[in-house]
Length: 322
Length: 261
Image (tube, rainbow over all chains, first blue to last red):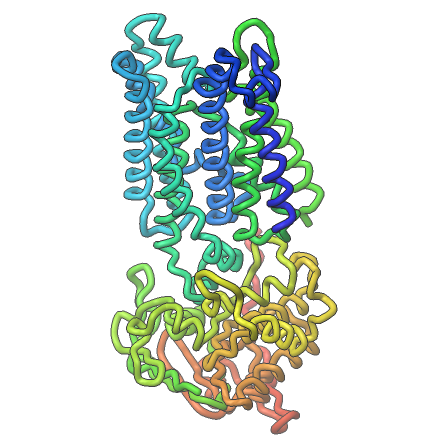
């Protein structure tokens, strides 16, 4: 595990540096480090650094949450959107656009998005509590459908084409045009949520043996579920409320780590976190560098690149199934 | 060295009464076999004894302390529980699977205790798994997997071991060796409670049996023909004793299947 994590961390540093250099205007390291090029340092400090930091935070949150939820449900298809948190955050942010409150400040959208994520999470937990993990997943599916209907409703009744366009655009997911204000807004939520998710490792290991055996080994299943849900709501809710829906990172990152650490759920958490951040940083650089007329949205790009992974997962399952 | 005691317990599941007025005791050196027909409540009794289901009435205690009053981690260190058909959802290595039995012994933070690796190595050796330690458990045969699960249950050296149908699905030789292991474990000063369908195995290896029928205790003590007839409703003959003990059921008359067409 240690070697894989160190390897990923080194790649992460490289990708982070690259993310500061890459863009419409390519910068050289000298331009940034000398500090004499005022335009270059402005581009880096105000545009690219917050964007890279955001990619780091959001990617880590998605990767870690995906790893925890796959461990909790023991289902390789689980991902952060499973509990209705992502669509809840999206509904909050969409409502902010719908009612035009995003014009007030750049953070009203994310604040409403966060509120949406927390409400969705409470609803999921209230509905599914006490019935085991399967009920929880079903409750998450129900809440996802409800919030997705709400988003469709907002699009349906959009006050004008611009609002509809803005909502659509936001839903596609992007890291463009973000500032430090949004980084500072979501940082505490991602740190606290990530902390809650990170301490689930031991319990997830025991859960490999099923719920009865895990409980007999002293694992408090209710506490584990609360940590996983609250952690996902805070970390992924905050992330989604700023960037919009970014798919597949949370699904893919744990799978990439799993075979290298002997499939043990607790050992997947750190590499999946690093891997999630790395994947999002690389995807963001690629999305910036691919010029096809209008900006290629990050969420669209991760879905496009992530879907073939789904095919691979199906083929692999077919091969390894008895 | 601990004594597990159940006093007049009633257990309900999903609003239905499963167990009524069950009392039992198991102490160091004892191997108690729970027998009874399908649906008699054996699995429910074992999970209640393990502290996973709370009885609606009565009390289960370990050395005089009621199970709900014992912190989960402490209880996990003192008793191990293996459900019927245990499974492992990820292709962990055998060594990792066995190590999971020490979950309750793990420190929340900091390095692993020194005896940790030794304990795992001993459990692997005790269960003939040394050569398989790196192998993913999903590739093991049924007998090997059952051994690995027993190893994971015993690795923490619990005072009380509760296993639900440990030999179901094993061939006769593997079933005998698994039973011999459980009986040796009991003889070394632990309490073992196992539900069994194979009455020959129960009679050969357990110190005594507890027979359940329709959620009530139908008999306790030594296994004899009268008890078997009472709980299964079928005549049985007992042959031999000790390692020659065998239960021979007389085939019940099958109802003729009427041709409906």
